[in-house]
Length: 254
Image (cartoon, rainbow, N blue to C red):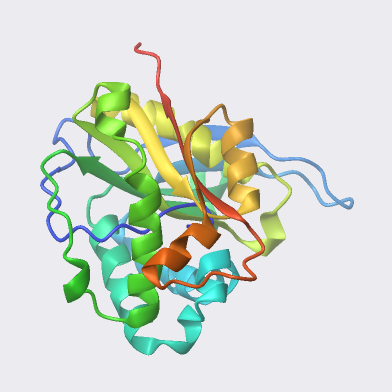
């Protein structure tokens, strides 16, 4: 969604390899001067359990409010859908591959400024039965994402049995304009290299995230016009973004 898709897989057999321990820093960079404020050093590292709840609380507050499909489907007025999405996010975070960006002081993480909920999708995943999904608004959103993703077989396209996808990228307002979104995208590559994953693909549902993905070198694999969802009884009329884009890239092997 916004940045990125929410899937709904009830079984995710992929596990982070033990030889890639949690707690690694994948990127460090210096921020830009803005409005006379001093520049920060930033680091992007594994999201661990100590900050997962804080990240998901922020996603629930900001992402569900701002993401185009969530807005048009009034997700925030559907507590059952919110609870289902929250449970999905918690499942994704438990894979231990999500990323968090912090300001850095003396080489250590200080203030949380952004994060990306990441999911490793594999051929062995069991698709969720939409009839069993709780929350009518969420069911419509999930059907839209699944429809977009089904336009291309990502596994065949990239010749892989697993790939990285994403379920939301958020940067806190005080640190926007520091290129943190693009840096979080870039940090996926060293993460994937360490995990032995060669490709990434995500359904991007907002103009901003589609532009960011293009800037970061992602190719458009398929497009779904939101008006086409009317044939499934899903009315997305008025959505400020007209299409969902399935976008991806294959990483160069080290």
